[in-house]
Image 1 (cartoon, rainbow, N blue to C red):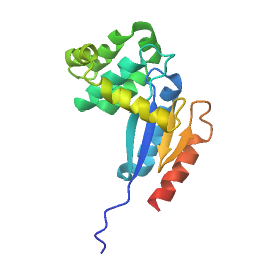
Image 2 (spheres, one colour):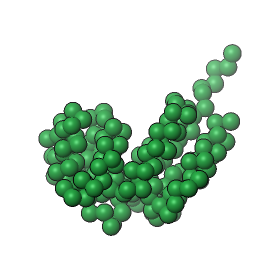
Image 3 (tube, rainbow, N blue to C red):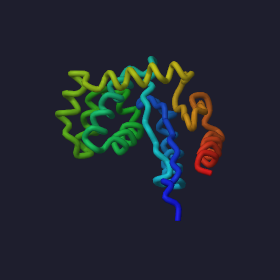
Image 4 (cartoon, one colour):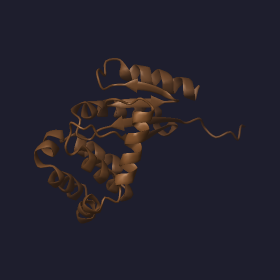
Length: 167
């Protein structure tokens, strides 16, 4: 019997929470979770695009949701309501938090005091440094897969990269 720990792979998902394409990519993320289970660690990395007015606030609110233990449910809920975020801005972010049972007042306060801004800013800087230009973009084992222009065939490419890492 081997004492070696099970192999794991990490998938960095560079995302703009106001991006409709990132909302579409949720199906792929769910499928990857289902296929790989605990062998795959999926990390949200923030890449708010300048064209999306509320993306930076959404990223900060998501970080507060992670701090409160409901990060991915919050991210999925926000991505499922991109138009509402576009129309209502931070009000929509706080409402999503309330609906998920988060401390919505704390989410609102985090948006005001900017406690998570440095995390978001660091992700954005790192993304730019490794060549991320659009969202969604995936990074597996140092290989970047850009879904910002087209997501066609992207999940299969990501799965191939994960399979190689886990082999």
